[in-house]
Length: 333
Length: 258
Figure 1: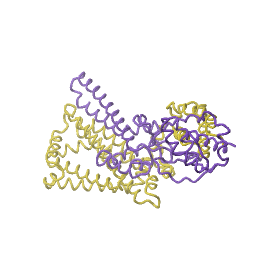
Figure 2 (figure 1 turned 180 degrees about the vertical axis):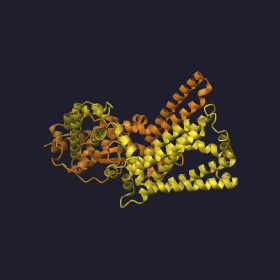
Figure 3 (figure 1 turned 30 degrees about the vertical axis):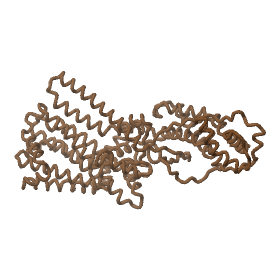
Figure 4 (figure 1 turned 90 degrees about the vertical axis):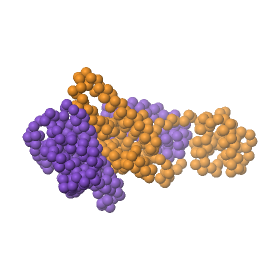
């Protein structure tokens, strides 16, 4: 065994070189080939040195120094690959619908948890206004009725209403993501937010309907609903799926089971997020526009058919191995 | 030399990673305080971007008359939505696990197995942020982190990631014993030292640390330890306790170097 100081003196130039190469804060793929080879061989030599250092019981600060460089080199060498548009589009256009079909039971459950309270809210409000006031403050309900009382003959561009639409976009996206994220609490959060939001929306539409503006609010919603409501349901389904993975572990640890389904869940959420972006653009600019209701409803039919066809047919014929490959190594794209 | 010894999982804030080269090294885990600071920096950056856009929109609004108001507000909300939900996913994907705030604080998100994280990992861990935030101010996330050995919040658990601190240690200066021990000094110690590897390591650590300590403090510490060693070796030492430890260390190295 050679003394620590001799060891350091021998090896330090290479450590410094590696430290310097890593210190340039460039991702690995933006270096030229020769440099990458150099980093790789310096890293392997450093790993060797680290083992020698641990074996020879050199001082902890030296081990810490080598450890630090090894950690950074490992991060740089393993995995730093450019984000490829192909991987993303494949994930979105093929894996997302395939994974939704695979988890159709969760989607169905999410739909029921959302639609039933919606109907309860709508019917309850239309039969007794007192019901609505139990759910939402009267002031807010009046505001909603007023907002939809004008129709959209003049469009919204003239008023503050486009701003309001923007606010609701932000709000609704928040709802969808919350429906997903709280699923980590064994699915309970997703269940709660699906029921809660179903009841809210049902109450609002019921109230506006009772006030005689049902046509206005439905015409407003018909454009973005195919994207937005579906996305909320998918996000909720992904949340429940996450909770289910934590409960029905199939003999693995809870987190191991969750890791196993992470890729599917990730594909669902990514799809929901993109659908929400589309919904946001429609809700911000198309829905409040002054186009005649016939055009909006025709567009709604087209959107609905498009979304349904995509979710039913997208990614069919994909090699089944792709979906099942979410293993302990976790998701990647 | 002990080739390898089974080390029990240390009670420490580090996570062990085994590389494909079969080398184990440790990542230093980042605690809540450092991560909160990184979060604040990122929050400030997002705020600045929004403020900048608001000013631009304000100027554009004034220039174009008030007609654009509604449209501008709509665009602003859309931008807010993208920044709010996309900021972390974007940076953590293109910078393999770092945001500007994390970069300033020297933090990086990596997967449990030590690989850099990728798009889906970043998406999952940052969407589940919503659950960590509950009921307010990352309260739930903080509790979960406190109970986890690797300081993972719920989002980290869902995505299989952890946040580590990238440390930069310096190599300590070579250890010189000045003036070099004389043959008489070395000869006064037994040839076979009844010292364990841990004791010699402790001795070396102390001597390497000595230049950074105040001389009086060094002397004080040496005077506590030196008599203990002297008694064990059955020798008597006179005078300089630190000198005694240096010679002792030299003697132990002399043996292992052969």
